[in-house]
Image 1 (tube, helix red, strand yellow):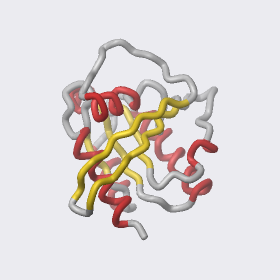
Image 2 (cartoon, one colour; image 1 turned 90 degrees about the vertical axis):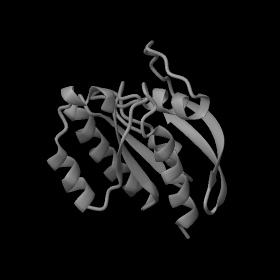
Image 3 (cartoon, helix red, strand yellow; image 1 turned 120 degrees about the vertical axis):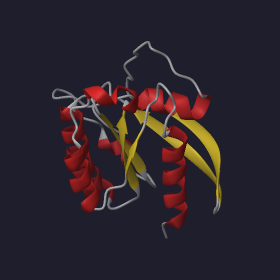
Length: 158
């Protein structure tokens, strides 16, 4: 979940297919992938719903979230408004489906010198209980760890 063009589809492609493309393709609606991952608690079959991004004109259809065991929010480190959108989305999702495990990924760590999101903003969210990881769909940095972290959280949730 997240704003448009933050790298949601690229993160899923990197995780599921070990692939990255420089070409930008807008997701329309939802694209579903699956991958089985091994965790210390056993194998987890992840059904990954890649939802179209949200902008000031089009909101994410939260009906897709019904029944979700967990989710990943994605923000683009080079665009501060994408973090603000992720925070607002998290509040709406929590109202819709209740408290379930989630992660916030700050994507495009390969462009960290151009980031608009500051460490203090991330620290504030961390103090509020958010789990935050830095990723790069382009290089693969942190991607596998992010999905495995969410999978482990799903197993730990009663």
